[in-house]
Length: 389
Image (cartoon, rainbow, N blue to C red; front, side, top):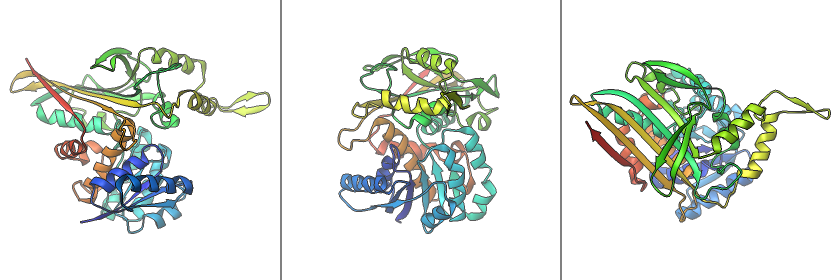
């Protein structure tokens, strides 16, 4: 059977999603829609060239206009949202009203909880809505569930993930691998975890640790950021005693960003500058983008999921490790591949009816065994290590 997909947003991740849907997900058509029609047209042309066939179409669309979205979504099988997280609730409602399945890249737990409140509407419409389906939040949580299933008595889950430049440069030893808005959002507020068996909140930018990866990455640092654990602390409360997520960066990044945070560069209250009202965070978005974009520099991602517990009465540790690099053939960055391709896999599962109807958290919606099989079909090298005793 062939399916009709819509990808909303033709930016860094949207085109990777469109490519994967068209290549692997039994697509009859893939429509890439963006507020800037020129961007969606250029994106569709790029993906079609990579696939050497005309399967991707371009549309102009406003993610904030539900009327136009419903027209765009009519007759489609699934919508994948790759627009900033604050649009996702409205886009999800439009998808339900249009009778479309829906998934997104999420990243903001408050918005995700609003989306999940649409459970009855989605179920009545006979569709499935799944937020947070990218890398983190997303695939890392799916792998956590995969590890939990292999243990008789799961106890702890620790997820560490980061997008990094292959050749770090000052001032932050970092390059933008997704939107600066999404990046700064992760650095703010509180993070949801499980500690001592209970869902809990802890402040972001805390609990700094050192972590080692195989060469060429080497020693890095990891710290608490928001959004990565998504809804898992509530879903898995009572199943594991510990569940946490930290973002990985090269050494030194933490202290530099923490200084900017403490100085107020990311505040959202306007300040007066020579009679002009300026929002510090918006100004910081502009300045950071200029200084850390490095669009020609290649990236990599690291993902490590560690599960501790008992199997057959013995202490057991299961570790999943993934290091992925920018793809020279397609030009897709590691972050685009590891964020966009998992979202496309989820979309494919939804149109095939492999998930329950309604608004469902990722960890309850997708079968992890099937996900891992499909992920490896894309050529990713996901390593599993099991230590007993």
